[in-house]
Image (cartoon, rainbow, N blue to C red; front, side):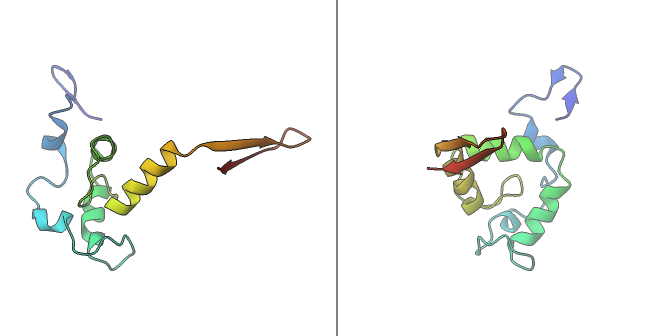
Amino acid sequence: MTCTSSGPLAISDWRAQAACVGEDPEIFFPLSDLAAPGTEATLAREICGRCPVIVVCRAWALDHGEDDGIWGATTAAQRRAIRRAATEPIVVTRHPGGETEEEPL
């Protein structure tokens, strides 16, 4: 995260630092939600890949339930999967010898 002269970048200021500023917004709202190379989302994800606030952007989209477009290099489907995984209980099994195994319920 970048800092301003007045301290850490304020949550409302992160958008001004984003690599997508000045880009065509249509790039970030493709018709296809696929993240595979060669799909409409590819250009948006390439722009996100060089963004200094990619983590803040992704966190904002996850925290606010943003269900459209590319945010922080993730598609809506990827963000839904992240939210699901974050709330899904995990069972940890300990095996003899100290080895552990994690599985979703």
